Image (cartoon, rainbow, N blue to C red; front, side):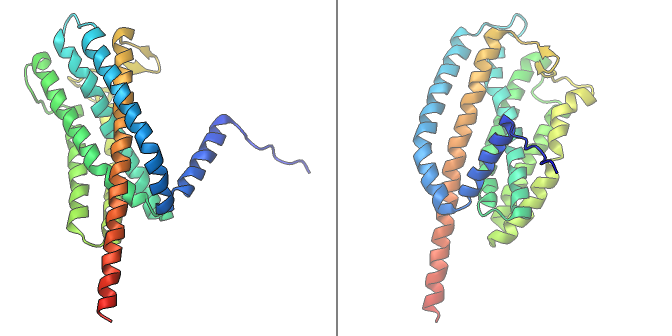
Length: 262
């Protein structure tokens, strides 16, 4: 009987290594040790990439013949909008890990990402409004893309409210996880809103069919996106470390109260 050949593609090996890393970091002590070592490097990398990106975006990238100086808002708006969506996707995946696999740090990762994602989404809406005023003649329209991004901000705020309203970590994590997974249906609505409905918002400039943005603008835009992504990773790891430490302190206080009541 012939053995079934093993699929050993680069993607398979990458997924296996990623799964091994997730299992390794399931232990809070190992996570704290790993994050402490990697954070200084990530902080330095994010600072360098963002400085490089800001310099090229503001001093090297050309003005748009129609939008003029306002096109520079794109270098903040586009990364904020895409990361606002990506962070929520991460929260939804972490929520699934918490609900199904009971990963010890899944709800910590989801909770820690909430305020960062909310800020990024808020900045995307603000910069989009500032960009829209000279382009559309108004700061806000009930456009499909803008409205669905506003719904995303409300989802972030709702999840944060759940964590604040429920004292028990397990109950709060379960309720927030269910809402996060259900709310993920808003992500494809945001993504494809400019295709499904008539929209003032411009369609994507980077598509499988081709790229409709000049390289002099695309390059600093991608650098800015990378820099803000690294910044999110830094902020997320710091927030996760703070949450782990907070829960350890709460557990120690609870044990101290239990010993005092014996």
